[in-house]
Amino acid sequence: MKKLIGITLIMVCLGLSSAALAAPYAAKVKITSNTSPLAQMFIKEAKVPDASAVAIPAYPGAEILQTRGYGDMKANGKSYLAYVKLLGPDPVDKVVAWYKEKIPSYFYQKS
View 1 (cartoon, rainbow, N blue to C red):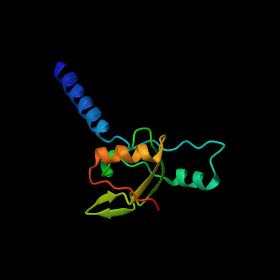
View 2: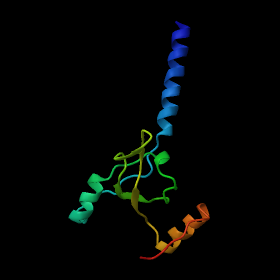
View 3: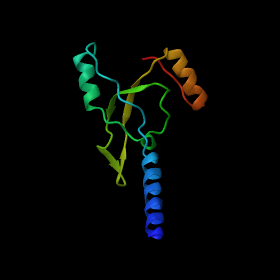
View 4: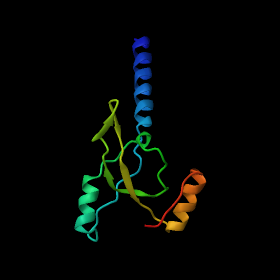
């Protein structure tokens, strides 16, 4: 009986650790009464990727507004994320400075 309990605990711990690895990249933007119909459509259709599917970190506090291609684009059996649009709580200059610190090759170009 003790061996069965020990094996079960190991299996539960392994299951918890693998679930922890599949962390979401960021939360979705919450739809409110002020959200435009177009933004509502983007938010509803957005798929939240695992953090491991995105090559750059999400800005702290940023939320997913829109994604394109996640799960639809595959290479070698893996899903790839074409892009993710985030809404953040801070001014653009602060966000740009944060990304430049995290990713030295990062550049920002106003469109």
